[in-house]
Image 1 (tube, rainbow, N blue to C red):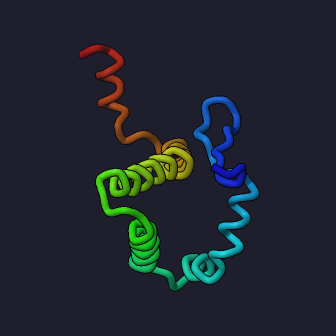
Image 2: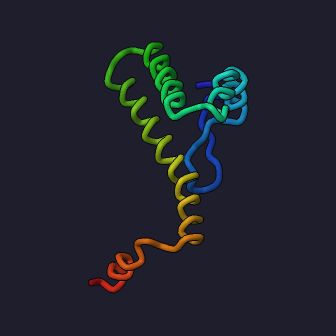
Amino acid sequence: MSSATTATTTSAGDMPYISQKRRREILDRAGVVWKVVREKEATPGDLNYIITVLLSHYVDGRDMNYKTLNEVVGVLESAKMEFYRKVVVPYEENKLKENGDIYSAVTERIGNGS
């Protein structure tokens, strides 16, 4: 594996990420795709289509077997979980502080052991 694709570890406890060099290489080639998803007119359907095409091309360039398909599903699941952890949770925590907890009665019962 080349050093450009070797995963590097960020601060303690963070998941390994691809190197900054490899990120630049990918972004330099992605060009118009990134412009499409950043457009105000872009829809969830557009995003879904782009992801689907990426997955299709990834699979098309490899052996069609369980390993390849499992890699794709694993990447999707990991990307989903990382997005949730890094983006959704902080957003929801901010909204919780702003608007109050709707689960307070339930969490109080859990805390009291009843």
